[in-house]
Structure formats: C-alpha cells, structure tokens
Amino acid sequence: MDIKQLDAFDHVVRLGSFSKAARHLNLSQPTISIRIQGLEKEVGSGLFYRVGKRIELTEVGKGFLPYARQVLEILNKGIERANLIREGKLGHVTIGTLPSFTSGLFSSVIANLNKNYSEINLEIHTGHNQQIVEMLYDGLVKIGFMTNPYFNTDLKSIVSFKEPLILVAHYSHPLVSSINKNLSTADVIKEGKPYIIVDWSEESKHWQKSMIFTGIDSLELPPATALDLVLSKNGITLVTESMVIDLLESKKLVKIQSTDFPSLFREISLVSLESESSLPPAAKTFVNAFKFQIKNSPERT
Image (cartoon, rainbow, N blue to C red):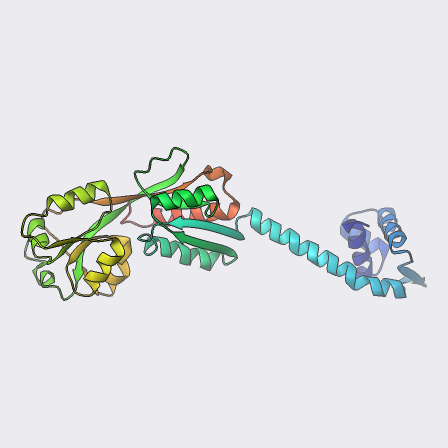
C-alpha cells in the first residue's frame, strides 16, 4: 500500500469516476485502475461497485475511507510542516546573550520575529562571554551574542555592530538642571555623587577610571546593578543606549550631555560554531531579522 494508491482512491470517491480522477491527477485511466486494484488487494476486498454508469463504495470501502483520508491529511500536514521548516518559518532557535543585551535592539527583534514568525520558538539563555562559549560547545545554544574582543578561534562571527554608550541620570538628579550649562565631562563625573563605573569594554573602562581622581565619589558595579542604583535616584552611570531607550522615552532617565564627552561604544558580535550558511533555517531567519534591525537602527554603527 502506498500514498499514490490512497490518493487515487480519495479522488475517485470525491469526483465519482475513474476518468475524472485520472484527468484531475493528470494520469491515464488505466493507471488509476491499477492503483485502485493494488489497494483492493492490500485491503483484501473490493472498494467500489458499479450501479449503471455510476460507481459506489462497498461497505468495506465506506469503512476504509475515513482512515485513508486521515493518512492523507497527516501526510499533507507533515509535508506542510517540513516546508515551513525548510523555509525558516517554523523551528526552535536557542540563543545565548549577555544579561545587559536583553532589551532595546534585542527585544525589538524578538517582538518582530514573534509577530511575523509566530511558529518559531525562541529559547534564550544569558551569561557572560565564557559562559556563552561553554553553552555553544555543550550544544545548549546554537548562536550567541558576545562582547568583542573574544579570543576563541573556533567561533565564527556572523555579524558585528557597535552600541553607543551614554551617560544617564535620574530625571530628578541635580545634574539634569545643568544639562544646558556647557559642563565638561570632568564636572559631570565629579557631580555624579556617585559616579558608577561599568565595564563595557577595555576602552570605556580605561576612560572612566582615568576620569576618577582623589575625592571623587565613585563605585564600580555590574550594568544591571548600576542602572538600578541610578533609577533609585543615586548617581550617574555609563550605559548602552539600547539598554535604556524606553526609560529615556518615558523620561525616567535623562541623557547627560557634556562638552567633551568622547565617542564610546560597546562592540557586540553574533557568533556560532557553525558558518551562517550551515545554520538551521529558523536560526537563519533570526539572523536575517537581526541584520535587518541593525540596518534600520540609525544609532548603530
């Protein structure tokens, strides 16, 4: 018994004749007849009988029909599902990312992917660079977001981009009223009370520490802790713009300007142990969505 036999059987029932089924399937009538005969041999009984010029299902045919159609329906669903997987519209994508890279750009991609490809299931794990490397080797994640530089030569960079770093304070911080007074960066850091150092990159960390002199109130904290402290009306800190975009728009935080603030960035790479062309289709869909988001985000470089 094969699928072609079941398909021929279903078409004969639907169209009411062997000749119509043959035309619909673009086959010869003898081919349809051979397939039905082969199916009847497998079932062990006739499936049709003639009434004048019409054909009718036998009792065996009536009993067999719903199961034949169920097989065809399951097969069609399987083919449809396989096509969706092949086209990258369905699947499971495992992603590792930094805790400080779960909002802004990243969350926008997740939201757009969920809207346009709701049958792609995303599984997100967080960790620092070395943990993400271990997740990739263990097979826990297929792709990962890491800060540059990284030194594992097995990793293949799929896309890299830079996130601007900005100084922020709570809207009620005394510095906010001085934004338009042409303060130098040294003045801003001195008046931070405290200034909270965050390690975004070697360059940014070196610059921050170079600005801290004796008598300046400062702390060194992880990004999330630093942001929590600023939101509780304590101090100022350096953050990625994408991390606080919603807080800036809602005016809970304010970007602190200074006359000589340098252009500072955190560089992120999307990496995998596989080349981009070897990734599963659903993972490629995620990568393409991310590249599109970067291309259409003017604050990225």
